[in-house]
Image 1 (cartoon, rainbow, N blue to C red):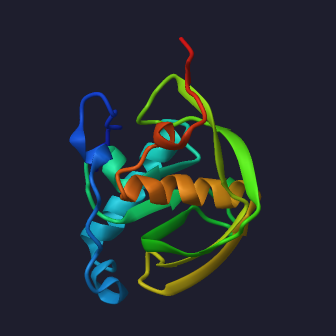
Image 2 (cartoon, rainbow, N blue to C red):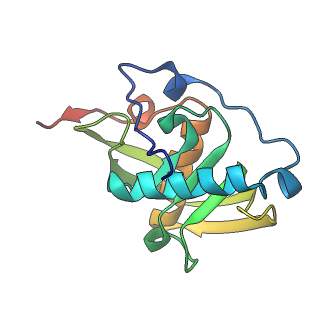
Length: 163
């Protein structure tokens, strides 16, 4: 049985505040059984913790990998992104109340660009070019921030802890 990944919280783990390393040669390196199992474990953890996205550093792996829940993408499956990078941002912004699995019980409004374009690789090592808007763009930016050691609380207008 595969190991269950546990969420790392900001108060106890430095990984969530660390700039993550890129995956080298993603066109081929992500096709290994070990990487495919890790992708499946990330998806399982996202679902188990009721997340709409998850990033590798949230489970103690400081690599540039994140997952976006399929309900927030334009894809039929959960979207795994390797080495995602934002290549363009709209000037128009969108304000959204955010929370985070790594900062449990804390919420706050974050203003982010309303539309973005992201380049990355899929779980099969295929390049992907994403144009996202609305909630999809917000979730992508939130998860990519994790890969740079940035949490929503760093960008929130204010934060509110709810018990």
